[in-house]
Image 1 (cartoon, rainbow, N blue to C red):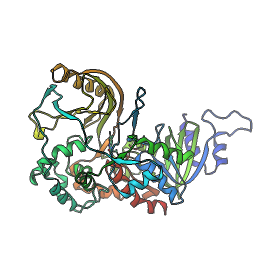
Image 2 (cartoon, rainbow, N blue to C red):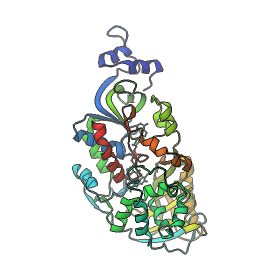
Image 3 (spheres, helix red, strand yellow):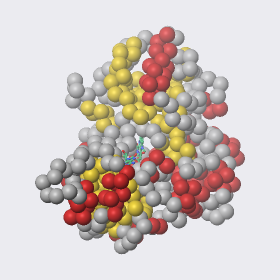
Image 4 (cartoon, rainbow, N blue to C red):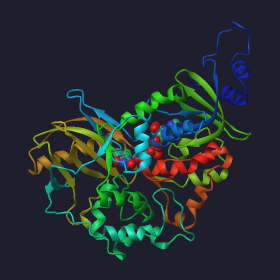
Length: 467
Ligand SMILES: Cc1cc2nc3c(=O)[nH]c(=O)nc-3n(C[C@H](O)[C@H](O)[C@H](O)COP(=O)(O)OP(=O)(O)OC[C@H]3O[C@@H](n4cnc5c(N)ncnc54)[C@H](O)[C@@H]3O)c2cc1C
C-alpha cells in the first residue's frame, strides 16, 4: 500500500473517521475509492511501535491497567528476537533467538498468564571441542573456572541496577567509560572473560567496548542466576509460544506487517498514520511507546525535533546472526566452540562464528555468528559455511556441511555509543526523553539485551504511560 505525500498529509490532518474518509474520497458518493483504500481511524490510549519482547509486554500490561492499546509491528509476527525453528521432519523445536530467562516473579507471572510452562535450563550436556575456526585446527584449551564471579558481582553492584536502566552516576565513573579489558585487568577478573564473552554473544568486541556495555549485559541479575543455577526456559523448548498466545490475546490490537508512515505529536496526543495489509489507518492515541530499536531509520516519518535527532543519531549498531545447520559426521551431542590460539583470553576475533551447538534433533546444530558491525547476509551465510568446512578440511572432525536450514539476522543488535558520549552524559539525555512529547521508550537499548531486565524496566515506566 503506497500513499502519496499529499494523501498522507491530508490523513494526518483528519481527526475523525468521516473526515479521514472524506480526505481520500473527495468526489461524490459512488466515486471509485482511491487506490490507497479508505482509512480506518483507531482511537486508543496508547500506541506501541514494535512488538518484540518490550512492545508485547507493555501492550499486555497496559490492558491489565484498563488502558486501550494498539501495537504496530513491521513483521508478520510478534516476538522480535524471540524466534523458534520448527523442524518439519521431526516436529522438534529449536529456539534460535531468546533462550533463557531469569528466575524472577515477574517472569513467572508473564509466562503463567499465557499458560506457558517454564523449566530449569539445565546444564549444557554433551562434550565440547575447542576449535580455532580461522584455521579449523583444534586448540588445547580448558575454560578457566570463573572464580572471580563473586568479586565481579560485588564490584558492579556499586553502580545500582544498570542492567535494567542506564541510570548512571554523574559524573560517569571512568571505569564504566574505559574499555572492559581495562576493567578486567584493574580488578583481576580474567577468569570470567570467556563467560562474559559467551553469555554476551552479539556484543562484538567485548574487551574493547566501554565497560558499561558488558556490565549492562552481564549484570547483577544474570550473575545471580549463574551463581544460583536458576535460569529458566520453556518446558516445550519453544519460547515463541509466549508470543503466539500474546498475539491471540491482543487480537485486532496487534497490527502485523504494518509500517508507520507518519507520526505527529504536535497536538494534545499523537497521530500515527500506518500502512497495514488492510489499507491505511490513522491511530489517534494519548501516548506513544517506541520499542523498535531507536535508530534514525526507525523514526522515518516521525516529527523528530533536533534534540531527539541528536540523541538517536549517536547510536552505533553491532550485529548478531543465528541459524540451524545440518551437519553429517559430527556426534549429535558435540559442541564446537570457537577459541583462538594466541589471543587474549583465547577470544576469537570477530566477525566470526561463536560456535555450533547441539539442538537435540539428530543432524541439526544451532550456529551463532557475531560481528562488531553489520555485514551483508550473503556474506555471513558464506562465512558460516566456510568456517565450518575449514574444520573438516583441517582434519579436526570428519564433518560435512549439508545445509543451512534456517538463517536469521538479528541485526541491529546491541546499540551503543562512543565512550566520549557516555562520559558527556548521553544516557542522561536519552532518559530525559521519557515522557517528552507524549512519547515513552523501552526495549534493549533502554534496558539491556535481556527480556527479564526489559520487563522489569518496563514495569517502572508503566505507571507514567498509563497515567
Ligand atoms: C540470538 C539471540 C539470542 C538471545 N538470547 C537471549 C536470551 O536467552 N535471554 C534473553 O533474555 N535475551 C536474549 N536475547 C536478547 C533479546 O534481544 C532481548 O531479550 C529482547 O528480546 C529484545 O526485545 P526488544 O523488544 O528490545 O527488541 P526486539 O525483540 O528486536 O523487538 C523489536 C520489534 O520491533 C519491530 N520493529 C522494528 N522496527 C520497526 C518499525 N519501524 N515499526 C514497527 N516495528 C518495528 C521488530 O520487528 C521487532 O519485532 C537474545 C537475542 C538474540 C538475537
